[in-house]
Length: 120
Image (cartoon, rainbow, N blue to C red; front, side, top):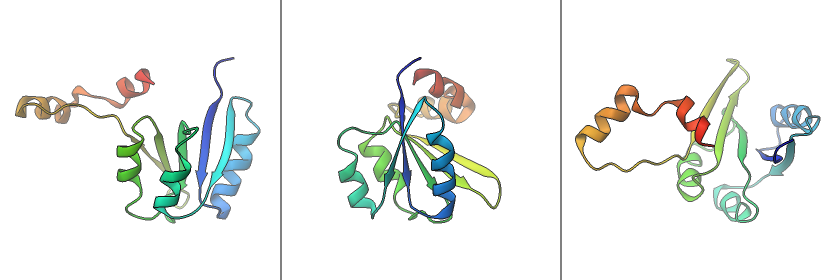
C-alpha cells in the first residue's frame, strides 16, 4: 500500500459530514476537519499540508480557492455540489507564461487534466 493521502474537509455541514464518514472507512485516506475563515484555513495548513481539500460548493466563500492554491500549489481542491451531482476539481499547477504561443498551447489543450493527475 502506498502513502496515505490526507484529505481535509472544509466545513461542518451535513454534506461534509457524510463525505467524511464515507472516506474514513477507506484505509488509504487520513481524514481531518478544517473550520474557520480563509486566513484561518491558510494558517492551519502550514504543517502538515493535506493532499486534498474537499468543500461544499454551495457553502464555500467565493474567494477562498485562488489564494489557497497560490500559497499551496500542491493541494487539490474538490468542490462538491450535491444538488447537481457534480464536483469541481481545482489544481494549483502553475506554468510559466513566456509568450502568446505558450498561452495558445494551454488553451488548445496542451495541458490536460490527465497530464496533471499523472504528475501527482
